[in-house]
Length: 227
View (cartoon, rainbow, N blue to C red):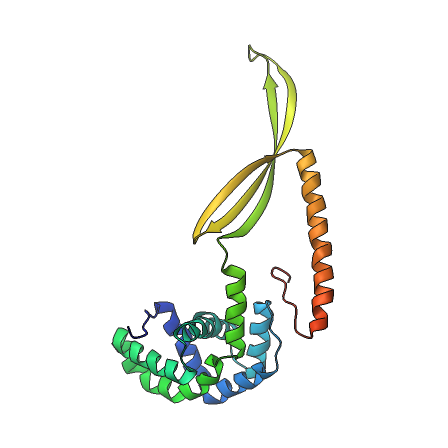
């Protein structure tokens, strides 16, 4: 069965951004990425690249996240070269969106050779795609944590007086499982919160130690969630 995929509508805006960059800025973008270390700070990456090639940051960001990173993943999955993948992409565009191809196909084909290095195996966005896959390819991914604290009254049998007040805490975990958002509520007491604090302190110490030791490998150490 031949390689094929459905191009999402939002991707065409990203393709237009690459067209608008033009051959010169695309070539400059490739040069900017040549010796750049991988990072998870994508906001800073976008700002830095946008400044370097003098192009609007929001368009650089869209081109990266709706075109360059996902297309690198598809190219790797299909096990084809960047050139072969771009040929496939052009055919799919002509088949799936004739109107866009009529309006933009010629200019896209002119800039495609400059896009090729950005889709190359072992290129910056190929590695960035692999990095994001390592972070996301897990059955359950946490999205948010909250601790809700409530003051609840203890009434007498006749509901005529309050005999005591009880403070309760609930740990709320928003997470994603198989692409579906879910929420978990866990009742915790003060001893649970102390244990959680201790575990967080231990995790931070382990993180610092691993960063220090892994740094001796001579490659950047990427820590998810650090700004």
